[in-house]
Length: 153
Image (cartoon, rainbow, N blue to C red):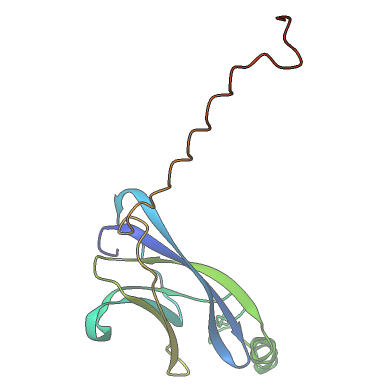
């Protein structure tokens, strides 16, 4: 389990033959602090703090990219077919990354290729001051006059 956090980043990531790309990061506040499950996977999404210190992380895989073959049961032909399929996969997935206090960036690390990408985080919605909206000026009251619609003479 991860540490209890009150905020997460919904991280949209893409995999193609060039590697991992971070497509979008959306911060979201949780209704109450919660810990997230940890899973196994080739990729690791890390919440980074000062001096790029890892504060928390989750692991994940892209659809159709994880090796599904079991070494005991696979023929060489099936293993070759699986490798061929994974070599041409383009996939996009959304990963929920815990954001402990002090998180300033998110990095995604490919443990097989030993490469990574990172992106700075925008300020938290809870930390941003509420935007003051100026009040609209009150329009002046209409003048009272004996105009065209008046019955007074």
